[in-house]
Length: 139
Image (cartoon, rainbow, N blue to C red; front, side):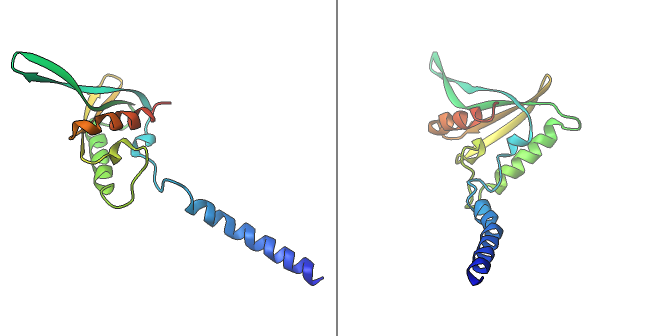
């Protein structure tokens, strides 16, 4: 009789505590803010650099296309993304978020049926990582 009660109490305790451990083990506390919107495409963001008579194109980040939503404006999206970028400056990072690469800037423009979000790495060496992370948003 005592053994049955002990097993029942143990099972109840485990089922009560298990969701707490599952939540604590989640890899990302908050998802990337661009997951709140429908991303329709991503392409490399390149700039043309002139040197003397020649010019070269260099990868500087990613251009993410976000589908228009009712009530969403380029200015509002710019504000929301800028706030999100400022909040990410703390110790908690977001794996695979394009904004979680050090020293990025962003620019939002209207683009036909949606918005163009340019995520620009200040350091050219980090541009490929910005693009890789941005491409994870499509799908």
